[in-house]
Amino acid sequence: MAVVWRAVRGGAAYKSQRAVCGQPDLQGAWTNAALTRIERPDAFATVIVPLDKAGAFEARQNGKPALTDDVGQADSEWWELGTTLGRVGGQARAAWVVTPANGRLPLTEAGRRVMNPPPPGFDGPEARLGSERCLNAIGTPAGPPMLNAPYANTYQIVQTAGHVAILVEMNHDVRIIRLSGAHPPAGVRLWMGDSIGHWEGETLVGDHQPALRRSPARRARDRPALCRRRGPGVRAVHPYGPR
Image 1: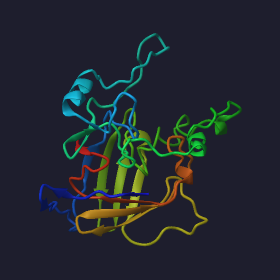
Image 2 (image 1 turned 90 degrees about the vertical axis):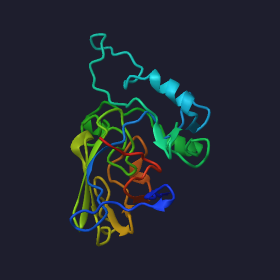
Image 3 (image 1 turned 120 degrees about the horizontal axis):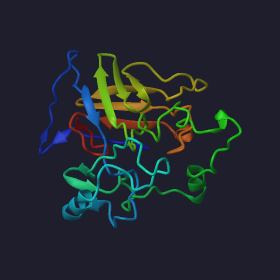
Image 4 (image 1 turned 45 degrees about the vertical axis):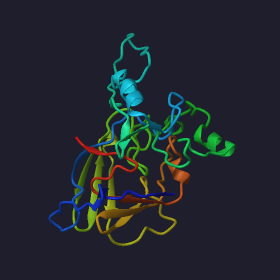
């Protein structure tokens, strides 16, 4: 699985500002809060939403999910869904999935069963989801891939000549991308997986090994290595914007 992000604006090659170490500067606070999710919901017929329909949909949103809270008959949670659909190249998108064109993950029936396992039991804390025990975030905001969540969608990127660190607001996870070296031996599995990377011009190319933890959102534990390309000003898959 490969995700390619190109740092290009308009017809000319984009030239980013430079960090102290001389690399393209990715540092800062960012957010990927958006109403867009990985798959197209039934409310939209196409992945690319006409801007007039996108505007009408966004006008009806308040940044909260449509649910009723049973505790005190009032919403007592903090939500941060965002109030707009993600934009890619100026186009409003109903899904982050690019291929297939229908905006749905091409899962087999066996894959869907893995994605939707039976509810966990109550025999002990070990049976409960890691997100319930605050061992990992809800969904995969720490990646890979770094998908938007119902709240806490802020990221802070700090980089040096040898590392890029991404602090995730939810659960305060930190993904550290080493810019040299190799992955650990196959028998060594890390909680959040392992990330190494290198620069190709304006683009940071990251290679990510699967996480040890089991993510109910995308079954990260069983996913093969993921290659991602990230460049300043990118809007190709995850439309980060300065917060």
